[in-house]
Image 1: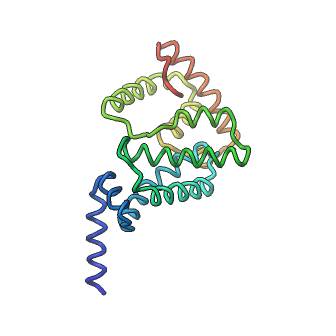
Image 2: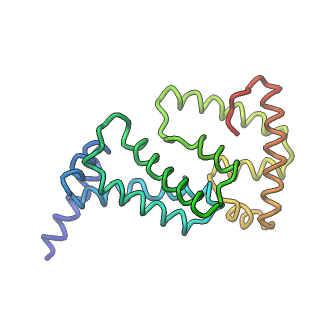
Length: 202
């Protein structure tokens, strides 16, 4: 029994080092261990990704992610490698989310714009450098915000905290967080435009 447990641990460690593409190859042959590894790799990121649009409804986001990952399992043999595995998985999750929002009539224009901006977050090295440069400029501009506005921007955009989490951290109401976010983003947009940065999606 101990030997079996040891072998299972070694297999998990081996699978964790494999690329998404290799895991997909195994999954397309029905390898459940490889799928478990891919699920563990993407589930937390996908839940965070979906909950941004679903107004921090983590439970619904988790349900949609499970559905999306089930589709990944069933459709693995159809993955043609024309895009990155991450792009393919995120597009499946996005489609699940759009279908659910439309079915429940909860889709708003704001959701549409957020979804359009939410493509595969795995940027290439050039994009990452550009984003780092943009982030540095953003940090400099944030110095011109009030302390209250700077705090909500820092917590949401730089620490990936939800509205609920920010409210707890700052000990204020969730509606207050949303109001501060609205005015902080409006002010930052003005500062970005003044600085000549017009294509920053904020």
